[in-house]
Image 1 (tube, rainbow, N blue to C red):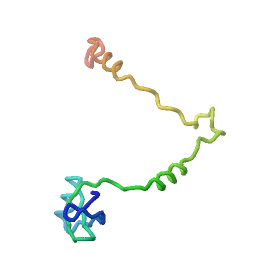
Image 2: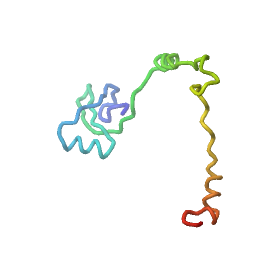
Image 3: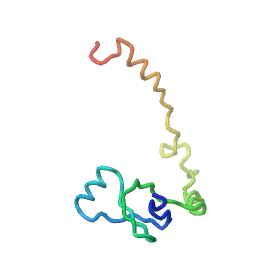
Image 4: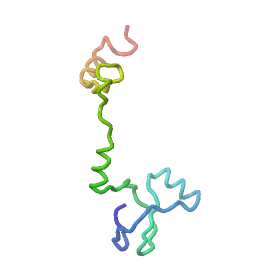
Length: 103
């Protein structure tokens, strides 16, 4: 949640579940309890995850490790994942002789 539905304040934070019923509701629905610091509203909403400033995002990008040059050409070097052709997989399965159970 970004804003309080009651007073439209941004001073909203996640609240703890109070009892087993609320814990059960949280697990089943994927929603979480929230509370507003301004007006005291408490209710349920979808958890939108953390919010980061552009400075925080820039700092995080700088924290990514570059590819180590001493590993290039070894089995430890990072490789691009192979491209998967879904259509080719479907063609083989739809072919009568390749269906499971056919010999």
